[in-house]
Image (cartoon, rainbow, N blue to C red; front, side):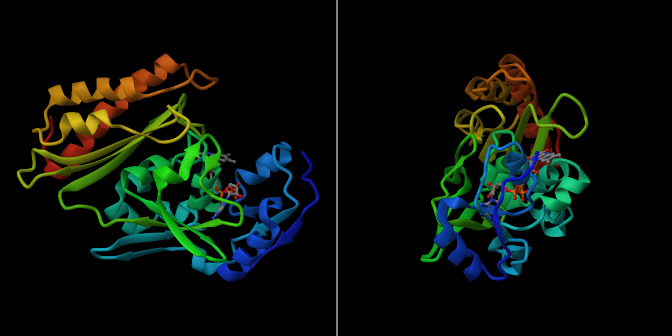
Length: 295
Ligand SMILES: Cc1cc2nc3c(=O)[nH]c(=O)nc-3n(C[C@H](O)[C@H](O)[C@H](O)COP(=O)(O)OP(=O)(O)OC[C@H]3O[C@@H](n4cnc5c(N)ncnc54)[C@H](O)[C@@H]3O)c2cc1C
């Protein structure tokens, strides 16, 4: 369980970090909270020659919000800060819920939102709500920045769109649409610190009548190598009055779209069932949060 020898850097500015990562390339790893990276190093799955600790760079931390424009979350922001942020709870509820479910309080005080997406575990807690909320990421190198929707950043199990010499610097969340609500839910084997068997998030927008679905995004985690955005559920519900019959159809459709594997945490068959259960639950809860009505 010993770590390999590495050279350690703790830059104080984004410019210094980008210069280092640009110069050291793939021999270097960014160290954020270390809650994934250090485990992989202890298990000898990774042996970087250089570690670039980004925790002392204040520009990479924190949550800002501008009414009408949305929120910006620094990639180095701790999950606990997201969990307790009034902005996130008030405007981006699904992310607030997911942040509160990640690991334990100790883990949430160390882990960062950037690390959660860059590690790109299929079971990661925050990517499904971030994708449902329409998040984009900003990726930076010494030449400048580029912006990508998060669903195009996470490409597969532990695979991202980060190129050599780049770091993830921030997440941009659009202003929530009027008459909209987002929700997150997960199911694991026990109500304790564990890796999710399935996690899901929904973001629903209703017309002014408070009944008709104007737009919807449903995202499934842990049932494919990367967050899976439902195509069928929005096409079933958009433009229709929300009712329990449609919810049943949506649950069946989402379950059919899921591409789960069987592993130590759950069988593929169980995961498909869970997708149906969580789809029903999330749609009803999110609808009722906007409309004040039940179905
Ligand atoms: C006990 C325990 C319980 C856990 N429970 C959960 C859970 O319930 N749900 C869950 O989703 N996760 C869980 N995790 C995993 C982990 O805590 C999260 O994935 C966390 O968000 C990782 O963030 P970090 O800051 O610690 O990343 P690190 O470990 O520092 O980094 C992870 C990877 O991302 C890269 N990286 C980090 N930040 C950047 C950046 N800004 N730019 C480029 N690359 C970057 C690193 O180089 C590394 O490859 C758990 C971990 C532990 C140890």
